[in-house]
Image (cartoon, rainbow, N blue to C red; front, side):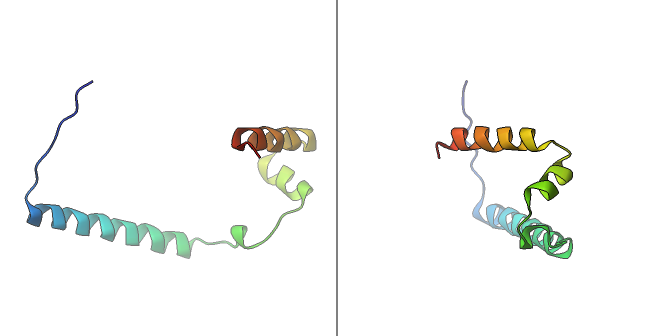
Length: 72
């Protein structure tokens, strides 16, 4: 698989980076506006099961597999 090197004028590069920053700012403002407090609290097992529509056993398996994947 070959890689391509693209040479871009500094002015064009800065303009592109400005647009990317603008898009990033818009995304950040949307995320702040849609904050429903979901990340601002701790949930008990039953609430998590209901939110994910899974059984307690399935949730325990998911946690165990995630810990194994992260080598915790």
